[in-house]
Image (tube, rainbow, N blue to C red; front, side, top):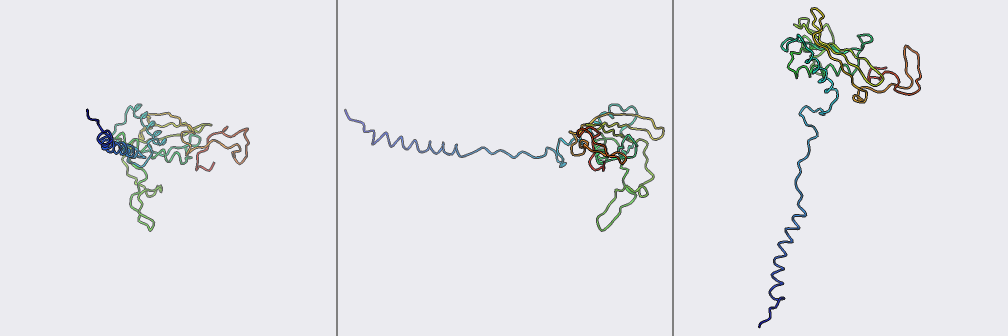
Length: 222
């Protein structure tokens, strides 16, 4: 019988088979699956999807739509700036931003929203071209509007109560109403807990700890 020389035949064959296998294993170890980057925003408006002021506006308008008993979507409507319930004249940065949010939310429900701040003409200046104004003398006096959205705000120790209603201008009839509450923590960019020392009517008061008085709306100077 003839003897099989493993060194001359089998081992070279194993070496030839091992080299391609090693290359496959090596490529599999170094190649990683390509993962597409996650978008930082889920919408195209440049706003975070969890913006609380937008959610608050949507919540109010959804309730107004639910309670509405007369206003049709084709009837023109304007949105007034929310005011503090204590004097019905004071306002703040939160109220002004909420007004803009209500306009957007009403439009998303396909209501016929009219912009009160549109001047009767374009103002061209070295700083830019402007059409929005708060000068009542430049506002149009011929707006065919019979409904208005009004809101009152009541600060508490931990947030803000907001009452909103749609009123018919011709007879002051309330055709829809909404009540909601937003906490200071939800709107921390607009509200802060009260300080330990506060000023009321020119008199300083010291509380035992911060946060025992009404929340302070940023930008209102109080």
